[in-house]
Length: 431
Image (tube, rainbow, N blue to C red; front, side):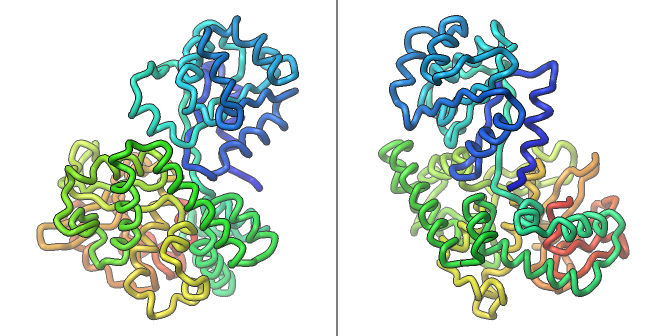
């Protein structure tokens, strides 16, 4: 299956300023597969080392981390010669070996001709929770997310439809109604399947939602195991409580996160470490409120007001035990959850495209779901789960801040009217 990360990896390989690369991301998003496929198609050979399946590897780094010492030993372990610029060296689950991370500094300084990528599922957690020397300034960093809507379309063989969506987005031209309806159906399928590569592959091959749900449940179990294995003993229960509660809060009319809803009397001091762990592991992301819409937005965020979204829609559906048909047909019983589900979907697509997202509220309760900086401009984004076009909050915002334009995501077809760019939900990946 095609992954957009391949373009980035090829640019990294060709760059004259290339440093060792750290590829981070939540479990099961496809890091290992992408790196092995990249190595297979762009190098003469791949030397792959996994610190989880081969714990003894760490002993090699405990003695010495200089490239001159490591390369002959790693060549012996891999059973093949590691050649400068012709071999891709992969350190997988590198968070389990602090010294291997430290060695990247010396590869950068003393042996830059070796092409080396380190990958880890819980690198954010490892870097923030331990005291070892992280190679700041000596590595390139990249985060891999689950597959976005475009990658999902390509995996299902809908290449022509994906191109048409991108064309209509650029020109604000409505899609032919039959194609629009087909794309909306694919969007709802994406809400059920999500972007975990194994789930997408299974769905592409079988169209079996029950099989996909089984895989999603397995991934969720792996996440819960990580919370136990890589977390402070006192924090495990709190982390699980917080994670379980995030999906509940997305069903509320106001999706702003509230600690008191995790448990009666819950406070930030009790649960903020748990939420930090979930964010660092890539399982969820926080979207903060901005008090003023000015550049840089980060300067005006309210650290006490935020929403939390999960990183994958399929896992969200599995966590809530939502029936596939209920999502595919958007049944009335789901009305309370439709808004939070659509918001979560849009946040995933924006995050994959590299945006830092924020939200805004007026003193009188008008709310804009997302504000991003796009092409140098601060752009408001309103999200509707259906084709409801009433957007009073957007009018309040536009009157107050006079943005260059606004984006409205809903079930409606493409268009542009009165300063508002109308974008169907399935095209959020184009933003």
